[in-house]
Image 1 (cartoon, rainbow, N blue to C red):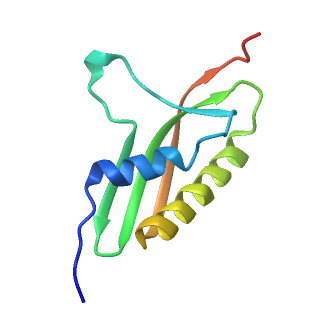
Image 2: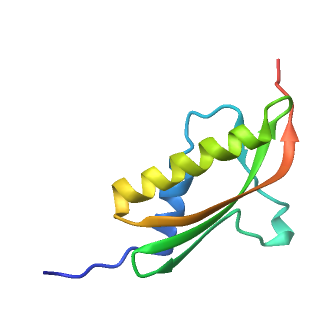
Length: 100
């Protein structure tokens, strides 16, 4: 059986794209000088731990959004990379309002 490796940037992209179409949230991008990555995926064998910083739409239930995000990310990582997400930590960094 052959072995393969997945680049961290690919895992971060899987996490990011798992949330596409979810209008109630956005990935938080801090100021350019802060040099902070809003998505971090740490691997230990086939297990991974994800930390993601998000912005939420004003008026949304943050606990409900966090639950949905955890599920979406864990399912995407399992389906696409065969990884088990042991933890998905969601950090809400900001809120945004609906734009007309």
